Image 1: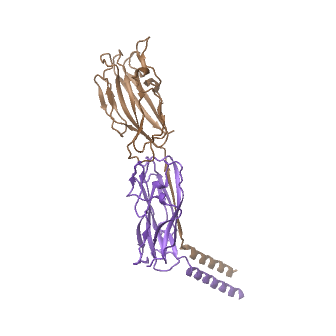
Image 2: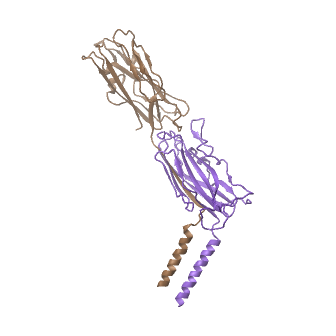
Image 3: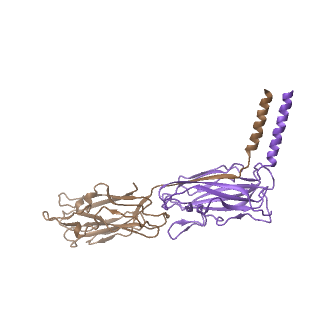
Length: 230
Length: 223
């Protein structure tokens, strides 16, 4: 019996010695990588303000920088004789997946009557969508859920009964965006290019107010854009 | 008594077999060449045994390579040790990484090159009549030579897209001075296999590939 143990021990020793630093003619390298969905919204460039009386762009947009603009629309009473005060805010979107751009807005006026400026008095719409430049997926079709430039004749008119100008088209004023609501959606925007590529989808966001006999006071409009990859 | 004779005889046979195994042992060997490293990764890692007497078993996780990773490039260096008592060649074959969507991660999106062929210790054979040749186009560091193509996508002088079947990467003369069948700490050469991946707007998903490096008898070049 001790001899059998000795034999087994010796066999184990020989085998172990042979395998401990045994040579091999092959080796393996296993590789993996993860790509998560990615979306972003940035400024598409400088804001354009037209039809204003006083006011101005307080904080302008800078292309490819985070979107954080501040605009003073100036006088919105009848002393402003322009037909509309319009702010055009360029947006730039980029994604590696289908995207949804939603928006929410709040409008707060200091007045106390129904004649104060309300969310329905602020026209809104997204303009022409542009997919261009190296690395941009130009094959996609985007869906604009708004009615475009709110100052277009088709998008609003004077209410025959009240006499108040109203933005009447679908999602053409901020009352349609009291909670996060889809404004734009579409397929992936960027082909496989690095983030340093500055191209993307650009679209102007229009905000417009028709100067009227609003109740005097001040109004603050706050708009938040959010892009997601559902 | 007879059992004791049998035992001694068996031991002698075992020793003889072990010696026979040594004398006819493999003359070609590939193993770990040291600790692999990774830089520029987000949630990435590389694992492998730093001991040059260990088998080459390396797992590379590049991590996040969408624009969520704001680093310019993810670079992985895998040292690989070679030993031989004869002229050799190293080939690599790849499986996996076959995304149908052209905007998803493709083999050509992972730069792959060979650099820094160097002696592993004092028992590495320095031949004067032949050199170690890195096959074209793999003689480069893809992390330092990436360029942006006309379509905006990053490309490399060589990549996993250059692998077709078993692709020869390297060849040359004898690597080891001694003729041991046992791996030693200092009896061959080491080179760096370099992988580079630039984060881009790839289509979302997880990709994987397996590379098998093989050393075999190479062209009969003098030492």
